[in-house]
Image 1: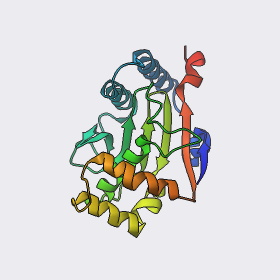
Image 2 (image 1 turned 60 degrees about the vertical axis):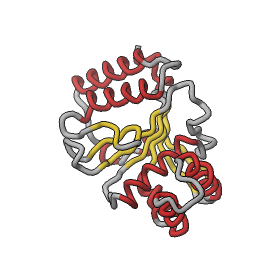
Image 3 (image 1 turned 120 degrees about the vertical axis):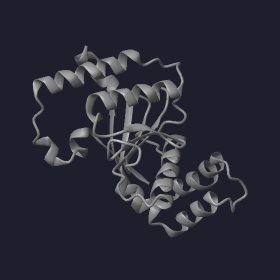
Image 4 (image 1 turned 60 degrees about the horizontal axis):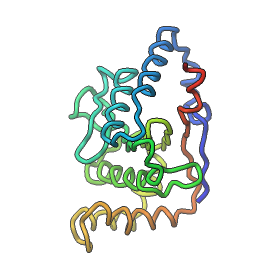
Length: 213
């Protein structure tokens, strides 16, 4: 596996680089980002930080056109439309900042956060037949790893062996039906076997603390 982290400017669709935000939009974004970082508490729970991320995304960009909430056991999703009846477009796994063991890094992505994203993606893509997923994100509020859904589709949803393993797990045909079994016995060894290049956007909000303040 070759990991290729991209800075946001490189990862962003070039069409968006031509869009010039207004001063009011910049100030609005800056105020919400400072609020997010001020409210972050390293020792607080995953649920605490999931709510912070949800509020930040909703108040900065997505309300009222895109509904943000949990879905089943998925930490956080952004819907294509204004309510939960619309398809999921973005899947987010949120961790607390001091949970380094479960977060990916630019050197290693085969961690629980990414394994969880794989499970949530397969539920949407295979069980729900959702073709509108755009991105998958792992974040601890400071660090953000953003994967294009086409990568997950190619690596997981188009791999017949992996889909069969997932279906066997989802239908209770394997030795265990707990999610930890899926992470350790199915997702982890499969991700470890990947030899393709893995491209993702990465940024750390800590790098922007000084100019923000």
